[in-house]
Amino acid sequence: MTKVIPGRMTHRHDGELVVFHIGMQINRWWRPDLWGPAFFAMPGMLKELSADPDSGLLGFELLFGAGGPYVVQYWSSIEKLYAYASNPAQQHRPAWAAFNKAARKAPGAVGVWHETYLVERAESVFVSTKAMGLPKATELVPVGRNHDGAKARFEDGRTGAAEREAA
Image (cartoon, rainbow, N blue to C red; front, side, top):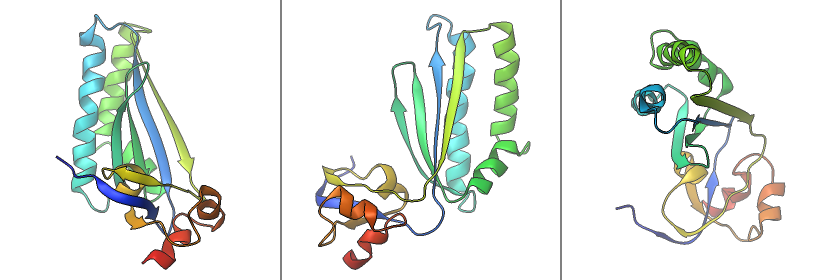
């Protein structure tokens, strides 16, 4: 079991940061034959990416929303995200082709979605939580003096710049 980290923590990260949300909406729960392949493809992709330190994947969080499961991913560059998505030798491209083929056979049974954000600045605070989110994907650091409020952390510039004094 992951331990709770006491105190006020934030993240530190220099360089490009991409936040990628990807998920599925299960519209026909009683048809796991239609949504199951897409559901079970994601863990393999995350394992593949996590095993390759050069993939660009910094970390991820598995979540469950109103329509089904989704993943928040943190990437070191938009180029690496797109390279993975389009590489036929890795798991995403074949899974995407299989999803499209299945979706044509049963329109509306399952949906997929994604959103991509290139982050110029980011602010975070985690108080007495387990390691998760942006600090887990980048670097977890204590909230520094003069950065007690969200506005101060955010106004300091690039992701994590506000917390350099905490190191």
